[in-house]
Length: 306
Image 1 (tube, helix red, strand yellow):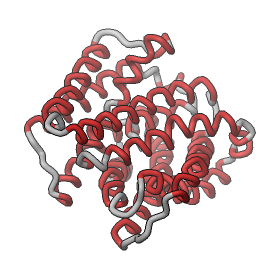
Image 2 (spheres, rainbow, N blue to C red):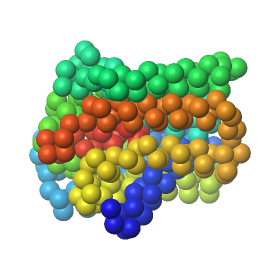
Image 3 (spheres, rainbow, N blue to C red):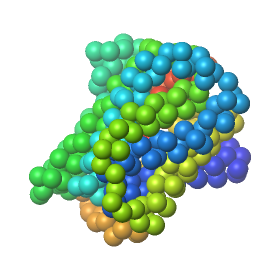
Image 4 (cartoon, rainbow, N blue to C red):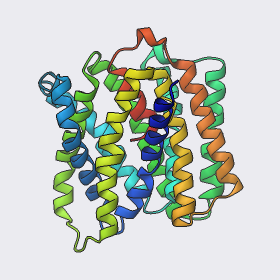
């Protein structure tokens, strides 16, 4: 892989890994709904020109009810859960727990989609991921009821990503990926606008303003443009590696910039969850030549939580 693509991959992982730090800062003055509305509205503004150029927005919005349903289960809902959860847990732990999304995808496939079932090392990955979740919830968060609730909220967000991936596969196979992501971001902004207006911030400091600008424009909008650039240059399989690098960045930012704790349980949890997700995700990944365009954003959203 060329040096330029390696650099873009690391930039993308750094942007997505920083999402949880930006959420944490934004929550100083904004409600969870305010964070989600701001980031999705800004992301939509960044993505619309690229989607118009690529084409397909009209076709996507002709299926507006399904776009709104997908946005609710795979963007707005999980984003609100993550933001609410981060009121009670460290941003680094949120980044680790979100990486469990492929684990939920494999578990749900037993009932929803036979084509996504795994065997062998995939099941080993599921077991490792579950062990990592139990370790983090039972050791790192076990001493506080509110922290445990926050961790569960983030896990529910990962569950939403997994459900959304199946819905995306069933409803939008073959849809233009960047148009679909633009549509779901726009729909998510509309869905969360009433909640944002119902509880407007009394004060908005420079820190939250900067964090929301970076999260919406950089971590959500520009990040997806980089993702599609990489996907075109090196293929979806290599590009999906970003989902397993981003949690490392989230831990680094949380520990170094906000002084969040990093214990032996945290280290073991990230190894088990990220490693287990990698095993499960690669065990169920079909050959690149058979992947549909709509499967690409599904995997990224489900794996990275962005």
